[in-house]
Length: 232
Image (cartoon, rainbow, N blue to C red; front, side, top):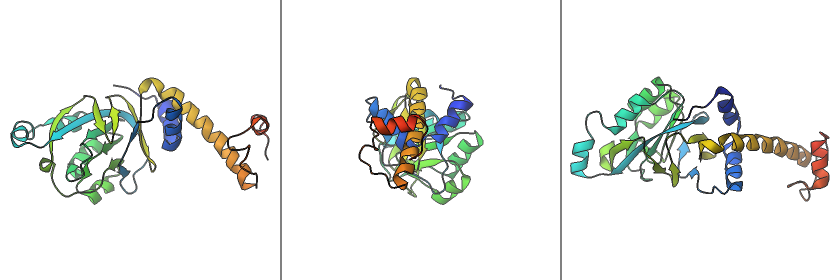
């Protein structure tokens, strides 16, 4: 599994998902957002390497063999390490709860960085009060066995249209959730933070009344002023 250094985690916490998404697109990665999920009310920033869980469609015999006891779902929540993000493949079906308050409490107690599921969350308000960052497709009161069988953990999954491998870096904020391959994360986060500084300078010039033409994006004249550290 990927381990984030304190310095890298701090940089990722400062980097907005929209900025990370722009940098990933520049590198040819267009399908790395987990679509259809939103944070629970009050959810803080989400950063951490992925620990994956996959559900398959409900079938009576398969749920009987894999759904009870210490199933794959419970195994994962007992094994998640501090700083990791539980990412659940629920095939984008929000008609059943794939996370509830007990599992959320277990993840919180284990020090998990958060949970992302493209399925539903039951005990919605109770889960939100725990303070664990949770991104989901919405609230639903039904238990797991209505639509899903907890099948396996620790494999490649598809969540919200994005491929997620164990150890991929997950970042989530109010704009959504993005998946970054570990070998790209240093490059992408540094480029994002540099672009944020540049955009903040441009915003100051716009607030002062500067026209967008030639400024956004910057032409050579504006870039010379920016690199010289000059104000408008």
